[in-house]
Image (spheres, rainbow, N blue to C red):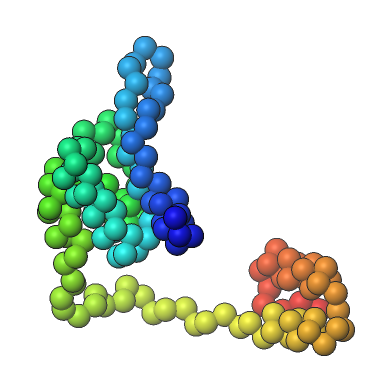
Length: 147
């Protein structure tokens, strides 16, 4: 199995496994989807279609959980969309202009401090540990430069 395929399977985290319920309740099945953007959405939807063609109905899971693209796929599945509808929704392209921004984007951060520290490190003027300490201090202080 290729590394990419293994990583995809791991990030998908498509689990149809037993889940413990509080005392007194029976055990159930959970379906957990990972993220992956539009590609993950399409891939997860395609897996659902393929499993449905083999007789595995994932919509019967007691709990459906997802993160990012997996949340979209999980919500569609939980809402009753058929596997074919899931695949069509994942492949549908958004048509039209992008929505207007809600607010003016923040200016990009000033990374000159980090660049100067990396230059000093590459020149052998400082150690990795000292740069790590200074960068950590900058992050902790919330400052854009350290003395």
